[in-house]
Image 1 (cartoon, rainbow, N blue to C red):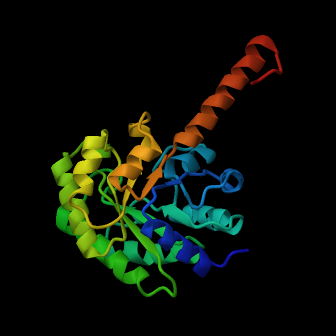
Image 2 (cartoon, one colour):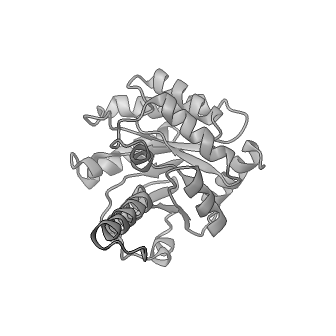
Length: 254
């Protein structure tokens, strides 16, 4: 089994390369093994996909459940694992930072922290303070932990691109290693962000399904994730197969 320190070094190196990498999102230990065996160099959890495995919707998972989930995925894989850590399961900067250290101890070597509380976007100053506290906390770990700061306004339809860029720039200055604004909907938007940020950028691919990896690479995007898309695809395929079983009694499910 690859050590956490080795995974951390690999993960940091992936972000330093000039080539864009795909970081797919498994929803359980089995899917994590499938994606690792397919050849992906790093994985990231999905809050929506994990919630689905528990029969819930995104945002209904507890901190303790998230920690168990991350431990399970990190234990069965040898590639770096990044946690979708939502808002850090706390509003206060110091509490979110303490929880972030706990998920690091569960075996992940990176995590994203959102500026979305679950019901509203955090005030700008509080959002920045949260990232600063998280960056300070993980800097004390015995390996490099890649902190991703997420500006959620575009995804939640509560802000425009200018506001998202303002937040990403502030998050970078506060110590984030990777920047992420889910909801970018065009290469023009991606290019606008790339021109004004100094840290690696993660892009959520499902909003631009026709854009290729080569096009992201041309713009200098560090990594591309798929969020809950693979989990939703699997759920849809299961639902379709179940419908065939009920309607026709056929066992040809493909």
